[in-house]
Image (tube, rainbow, N blue to C red; front, side):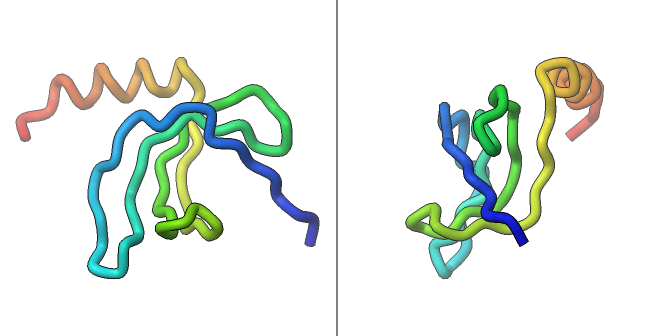
Length: 73
């Protein structure tokens, strides 16, 4: 399996933290040198490990923002 290279370009928000220090974060991430995309996933405290996540384009984020603004939370 090929190594996955990533660079966190911008930390947008920390949404939660587990007792073990893992954080659920929204970041702008460049994967394998590609253009950065918004990324929502769990990260180890030192950012050396990550959980499964979701990667979103700017268009996806704009659509999600519209959907969330219409929810009764």
